[in-house]
Structure formats: structure tokens, C-alpha cells
Image (cartoon, rainbow, N blue to C red; front, side, top):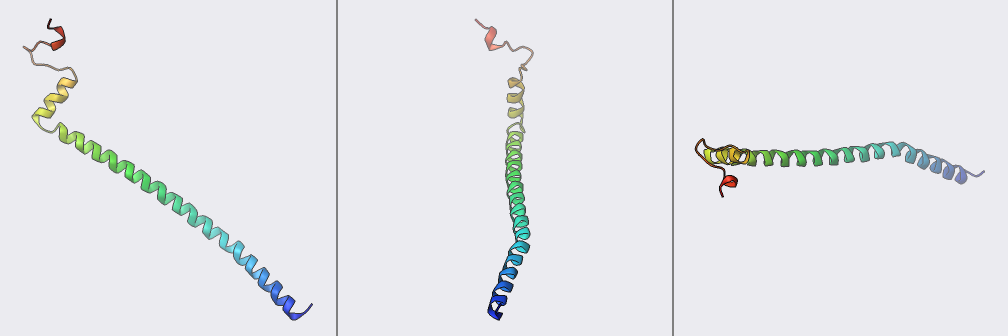
Length: 87
């Protein structure tokens, strides 16, 4: 075989070895990107839950909010007649 043939074979083997060696880091990078995307989605969901809870807490923070919440749960004043029983 000529010298040029050996050089071409060596380059082909080197390229193949580089492709095989480089595959694992790309797989790891893809896995890390997927984990990052999943963590970002979980963070957005948790942030939305926190915002909703803060909004609910603000709605019942004052006396009017507490009274509204109590009435939703069925509480009423001692001398108050429920609207459903009045005919």
C-alpha cells in the first residue's frame, strides 16, 4: 500500500474515533438540557401556585374577606335567618 493510502486510513480511523468519543458528551448535554427544561417548568408551576395562594390570602386578609369566607362555609350571625328558609 502506498503512503497516501495509509494516511487516508489513519485519518478515517481518527475521525471514527473522534465521533465515537464525542457522542457521550453530546448525549450528556442533551440530558442536562432536558433536566433544565423540566426544572424550569416545575419552577413556573410553583411560582404560579405561590402567586395564587398570595392572591387568596390577600382576598381574606381583612374583615370583609373573613366574613365572606365564613358565609361561604355556612356560618351566619345568631339572629340571622338563612335566605333559603324564608318564604
